[in-house]
Structures are given as structure tokens and as C-alpha cells.
Length: 391
Image (cartoon, rainbow, N blue to C red):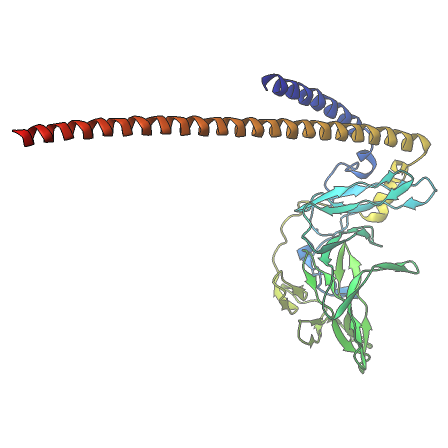
């Protein structure tokens, strides 16, 4: 047993060295184009106004300054830029911003699996049983729309998978299986976190209003809303929202108010909405991150795009083979470990059986000695009693 354990330990040590070498080779190669090649932190807080307004001038709160080629409205979060890639068939995947980290998620770089391209995206470390993963995609504004998990089924609803309609991507969503007269279904969406905001039925038309469809901004969905068909002088429309039970209409507000700033409508993490309102003007906290505008970073990083040519794919296949070899070695070691553990358990069972046999033998021997001693004591007592009776 000791020889077997030593041999297994030796195999594990050698495989660990081989694994380090293979991983080092992989790190020198594939992650470069899709990892953090731009290096720096790039971002203003999705809490600035994730759903403040879905239209025109009232989409954001009244603060933020234009700072050259930096985007003053981008959420103040830690973004990294992923360079564009040119696939083997000549198709180009444009670059985009993504969050550096997401809780409970791991980022997978785009790569080839054999001759099939596998898109990049976030992957859940632990997907709940019964859930289905909805893959993310690049938003039209150059920010990555993160994937999310959803239940496999939902009573009274069907899942419409996301797809392109022309050049526009339509997000996947739940749709009711039964229609409602004189109404149109407004699809639900995922908010800043991973909470699903249910859809609702709306009127087909309203006098004096038109329906402004929602849009994706900075990887977050800004829901649609009713907006007036006529503008009002020196005023801005603050959009309404669906609070989960009924539609709350928007309101007109003045463009500016001395000593105040406008806080647009927003949805909290517990699902409650707050209407837009004026608040006392305070100096905004300094930003921790800044984001270069997508068009500017795309122009400056044009020469950094990753081309998946024949040599690149050949190198990737070699790295993949090394990974598979290391995985096979790990599986072999695990099998050897399981074999050793089975032998250990077998020996333990043999020792337990031997111990039980010894214990039973000792118990029987002790019982016999006790019985013999009891017999001798009884005989001695009997003789004493007879002598006492004779006297």
C-alpha cells in the first residue's frame, strides 16, 4: 500500500508540472485577443439612470460633462475593451466593452472548436437545475449585453428566442400564449441585476401619444414608453413606466431649474419605481472609471484586431490538444486515486472483520473464564454449607 501511494504521488507531481507548462502555453496564445488587451479600466454608475427615460433628452439625470473623447453618460463601472476579430471566413466581429468581472460568472473568450466558431460571453458558474442559459450578444452601441438564466418553462407563456430582424437584434423574451383584444404585448427584460421584469399589455393607440420602443443602452435595456406627439416649448417630457399593475403616465418638466437637478424615473432592486423629480443640486462625486467613446476606441484599436488565419488556428489546435492530453492525464490520476481508495476501503474492511473476530474470541474466552470461576465459587460455597450442616 505504501508503494502504491508513493507511486500515485509521484504521478500527480509530474502531471502538475505538465499542466503548468500546458496552461502557460495557452495563456501565451488564445486569451490575448478577447481578454483585457486594452489594459486600463474603462467606464459613469448604471445607477445614474438605467431606466430613467427611454427617449431623447430625458434618458439620463442632469449631470455629467463632456470630457473630450470620453463618454460622460457611460456607467461608472469597470469595463474592459475586447478587440475586433476577423474569422476564418472573413466575417468580422466588432469590438465591444464588457464588465471586467461579474459575480458568479466566468468570461469565455471567442474561439474555434474544430471548424466551428464559438462566440464569447459570460457563463454561469452554477446554473440552477431546470434553468436554461440565454446567451449574451454585442449591443448595437458597442456594449456587451450579458447572458442570463431563465426557467425552462413558464405556465401561460412561451419563450421567443432572440434573433435578428434586419440589422437589429430583438431580445429573447416570454410572450403569452393567448392574445388580448385591442392590446399589444410589451416584452419583459432583465434589469441591471439578474431580475426579470415581466412584460405587460398596452393599448394599441392613445390620442396625442405614440409608443416609443425600448432600446439597449450600455448593455442595459431602457424600456419603451408613451410620449406626446407634440413638443412643448422650454419643456422636456419625463417618461412614464409600468409599475407591475398599471401604467403610470409621464409628465412635462421645465428644461432647467436653478439650484436643482433632475432625477429621472428609476426602478429599484426590489422592483419598485420612483417617479422623476427635482432634487437639490449637489456636486457629483468624482468618477472612478472613464470610458472612451466606442467610435473613438474602435478607430484607435483598428490595427489591434485579431485575425484567425491558418497559423493562428493551427496554434489553437495544438494548445487544445495539450489541454485534452492534460485532462486525460488528470482523469487517469483520478482513476488511480479511486482505485487506491477502493483498496484502502477493502483493507479497512478486512481489518474491521479481523478486529471483530478477535473481539468475539476474547469475549468468549473471558466468558468461559468467568463461567469457570463462577462454578468454582459455587462448589466452594456448597462444600462450606455441607460442613456447616454437619457441625
